[in-house]
Image (cartoon, rainbow over all chains, first blue to last red; front, side, top):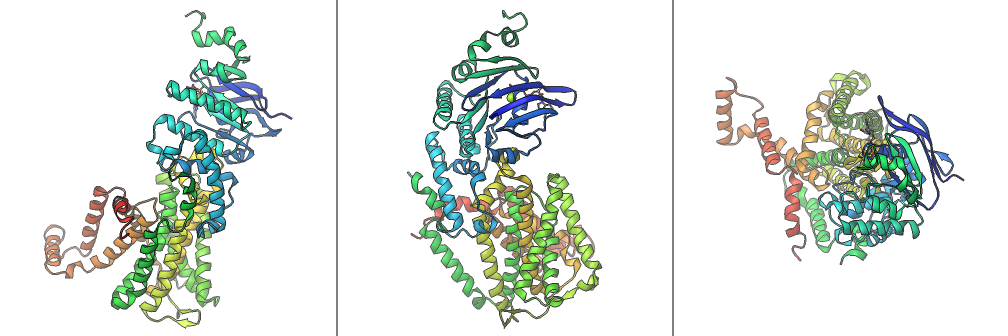
Length: 259
Length: 349
Ligand SMILES: Nc1ncnc2c1ncn2[C@@H]1O[C@H](COP(=O)(O)OP(=O)(O)OP(=O)(O)O)[C@@H](O)[C@H]1O
Ligand SMILES: [Mg+2]
């Protein structure tokens, strides 16, 4: 079975080829990193994977199914969750409610049961409690207890990033897409994030596709790395291989690879 | 810490003993109101309650889901005409006719929600406005519905009882209003309500976490149309005579204004907004007969606007009050409420 593969994917915006014939495969259980300079097309690749953009060409295969043409909410229900480079939280809900949205795909309460939630023994009440327990576990894991009732819009950046991760985890994905989870964080927060990503991989068995600019972190936690530039693959391999790859050095350090 | 048990508390119907107390007090007050106040004020209460239903429903759409509607008078009209027509033409009993008319409005709401999937902001405002205008035009053309001449409401018989007076009607309208408000409040605390807010706050994130935009946006339209439809069905019996002219654009704008003044994105805000504005709307009609103030306004309008005076001078006062509230408290009446809530939460215990 193919767990996850991208085959010959291209995405054009007018004349711009944001992604140009990209192919790679992610094995179940690994942390697979996507690196490349600004504007390389990393976020666009995520957007194609989870259905925000329909790719111009190519396929995205997840558990032997082609995802192309499916809507984002369908893709979420198949088991892919993500975080965003520019935080996309529900600003006027509190932390707990934001993470509850991750449980959306498991919940069955409709208009009638919801409107008739008369206490904790009603259908909706029981379901709420069951899923809030799950959310509480995530709040404990990510140490968000102190902000569980705060509106997320006003919280510090690092905490918002954690809440977004929590929301994605609550959806119990088998593939998690993280778009620069450490951007804008201080060293201590980065350490925590690295720790959690390892936990998510080891304890929860979730496969992770990661975009990150911090090379130390990428080299530290990734099993394999794909480097892209101008929408094209320039290298793929283990951290050691990719780090030494001449094309990668060129893309990151400039034309002659010395500066 | 409130952590571990909080998930029980959040789904409790009453969040504290004080809330139980106030809810019981409210129910008792509502029960004795029509016996304390004279008939005109019972009529006012019925009118206010009907507006509350519409505005609470409209707010699920505008305040929670972030979609605008300038066409709710259309759903209100569908409810009013639907209820009467089902009673007189199809011989439905009242409650069955009312609920069916609510569902007819909901279906139209769903249909109006479909183009709304592609439209945003001002474009959606115009589309819904078009709906509101069209629906009354269509009703005016249907002879079965009285056409331009209008339609009389039949006798109102509920569960075998004739309801003749405003007071009897009060005991029909107010319980329905209380139930619909509580229903909306519960809805906002569960899956559907959270999905609505998620769509409003971050549509793309909502979609990528599994919220079906098509379903929930059309659902928001359908639910709010249902509320307006049921309210319209009751309104037909407040007036006892309806014609298409009643359900104009101005009415849609009033509904929206009540929701905004009350405070979008809460349930109790719109209740307060509907109460304040529908009361003002009725009272200000008589403003010219208020001693001193009325004369002064008349003079003012004769001096500055026209020789005969402005007939609708109440709108100027009304508009002034709206501007004052929005400048003073952009979150609407709900903003006042949040600030005083901390103090009242535990009182009198
Ligand atoms: N919706 C869009 N319309 C037009 N062009 C776009 C759109 N989204 C992205 N692009 C372009 O596609 C290219 C790739 O952008 P993308 O956001 O994927 O880069 P990235 O690798 O994530 O960069 P960064 O590291 O800065 O986040 C850029 O040139 C960008 O301007
Ligand atoms: Mg990016």
